[in-house]
Length: 151
Image 1 (tube, rainbow, N blue to C red):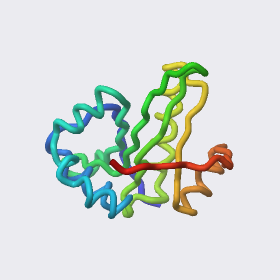
Image 2 (cartoon, rainbow, N blue to C red):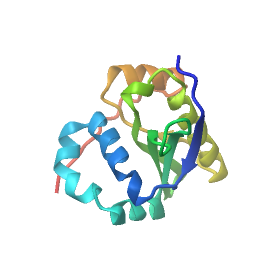
Image 3 (tube, rainbow, N blue to C red):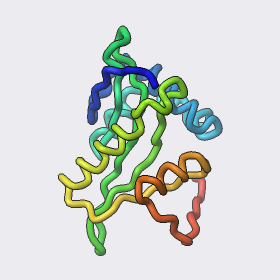
Image 4 (cartoon, one colour):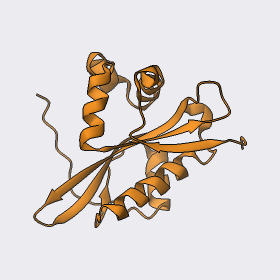
């Protein structure tokens, strides 16, 4: 396991971080990434994301430029049945997997969720290895189907 000096940030993204974010998103989903590349290359897109949600990122403080090595988005939802968070775009750079970066992201998600009085957090995952990790964290698989309509 790598010995890392890492720092966790919430909504601390600047224009110079975009190449790192694009690299991470490319590791997560190549088809969605390719379809939306033009939009996500704009810093205005990320400023909008940070206004409406929590963009959590983990940086390697030992490397020059303190690159982002992991990220997740926590989106607040307030509805008739209460407050909860939806977790999206959880990704740890391939070179940093197994080094505790995912655990740091999870710890920050829990902290922010409790500070905002969320009763639960939800997520979807199509990757078996990630699903196993989520179950280890205490997530329960639900039998409801997820539906999507592209616009």
